[in-house]
Every structure is written in structure tokens, then in C-alpha cells.
Length: 144
Image (cartoon, rainbow, N blue to C red):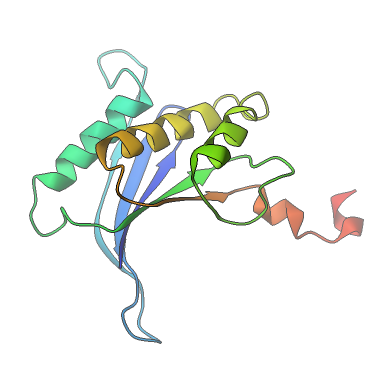
């Protein structure tokens, strides 16, 4: 399985196309990677959804890496609801949109990339993984 992973920062978008290990014990392989920097700054990309389109365009121009089976997204804050990876259906996306104030420089940009991927390839599943998942697993004594 090939997964296109996006990591949206406040002014950057990193991406990596990986191939999951086909056999137990084999490593995940990176097939392609790249970054788009200075999003929203000067003559760079104006926003994250266009940057996602640029990343998809870069990959589609190379037949060896133009095929993938799913998208994965790093999202900074999942609030109290999201402590594990989640498939991004309409309900999950709506819930994440309501968390925008928690991580305003990151979540909105990540969701713009999610929507761009949804527009470009609505047939592919999308999954989110949250930075805050780490904090959900902390022992109570360490969290206080």
C-alpha cells in the first residue's frame, strides 16, 4: 500500500510518499518526498490548499510515484475527542473544524490540505494522526 503523508506547518507543507512494508519485517520505503516553503509569504504559494495542489502535481508528473492508495495527515491538536488515528470522514472533519481555536496556526492549514486532497481524489481514504495523542497516554502524575 502506498500512502501520501502530509505535514502542514504554519508556513510550510512537507510531503512523503511511502510504501508500507509488503512483508512482515520489511521496512517502510520512501518513494518520494518534498517540501513547499514560505506559504503565504511574498512570492511563494498563497495558501496551503494550493500548496497541496502543487505537491500533487509534482507527484503526478512522475509515473513511478503518481499512484497511491490513501492520504495521511499530521494534525497538531485533536482536542479531547481524537486521541488515536482517525479516518477523516465528514463528521471527523467537521469536529476538527470546531477545534480551530486550539491550534489556530496549524489545524486550519492542515484541514485546508485535507480538503484539497478530498477535492483532487475523493475516492481515496484519508487518515489523521494527532500530535496531542502523545499527551493522552501520559500517566496522570506526569500530566499535572
